[in-house]
Amino acid sequence: MLNIGISIYLWYKTEQMNMDCRLIANTPTLAAILESVYSMKLLKAKLTRIDNEGEFEIMRSTLNTVLISMKIRLKVDNLVKFVKITQKGEKQFNRQTKKFIQRYSTNAEDVEKYKPEFYLYLNAIEYVIYELNRMVEVHHHEFLAHINEDIQIDLSKSPNFDYCKRTFKQSGIDISEISGYESIVELRKICNDLKHAYIQEYSLSKTLKLKTFREFNRKILVDKVNVYILETPNYIEALAKTINSKYPKIEIKKNKNGS
Image 1 (cartoon, rainbow, N blue to C red):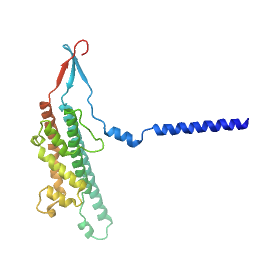
Image 2 (cartoon, one colour; image 1 turned 180 degrees about the vertical axis):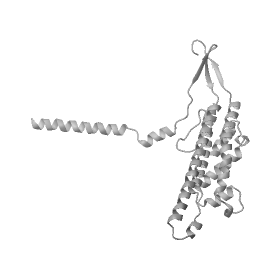
Image 3 (cartoon, one colour; image 1 turned 60 degrees about the vertical axis):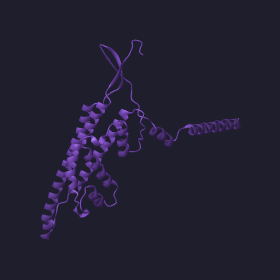
Image 4 (cartoon, rainbow, N blue to C red; image 1 turned 45 degrees about the vertical axis):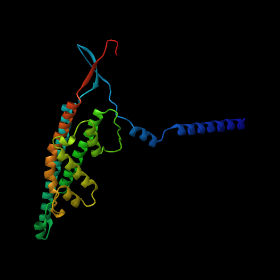
């Protein structure tokens, strides 16, 4: 009787292990899941509008320029606040550091030699450059998806600027004619220099068209950011309006039978 019980138990465990193996074999791997996600196409939902004249299917909607403008302005305002808070905090830290040296240093020259640094403030300026450039990239891709719903989107990578420019051109929109384009190009180059250049000062001096890299000072980026903060929202808003003008809303009235 004991042997029968042991045999049944062993048979049950063997079947359970076989079932687990089959489940594992049929379960998609993480790589397969990511591959399917990355290959997805951004598809637009079908929209309808109903009024006194009947029901209309919106074949192509227009970009909501008011909402786009609000989102961009809010993002820019938050970036400005971030920089101001960083600057104010670092100034306060420098004042406290100077007071500490005056109080505890036995050498009077230490106070005279002390020069406040603004590393955090300059890092905040660089962060604003990254975010503004990313803002342009995101809206480029969103606008292209609006024009062509079959566009292939790689969720693992940032959209290439030259690819977006070329695709806009094929759609009848020359972004080089949009107000603020030159500032956007310079912003992108500076962002790439900060992220990828082996010697940042040398690359940035070439981008900024300085005579020599010794002329470069990171405070130059502060003046540039003051321009980009104004030009970036204007460029995105102008591009959205151009797209709406080139691709107006298309509606088709539905019949009573739903066709």
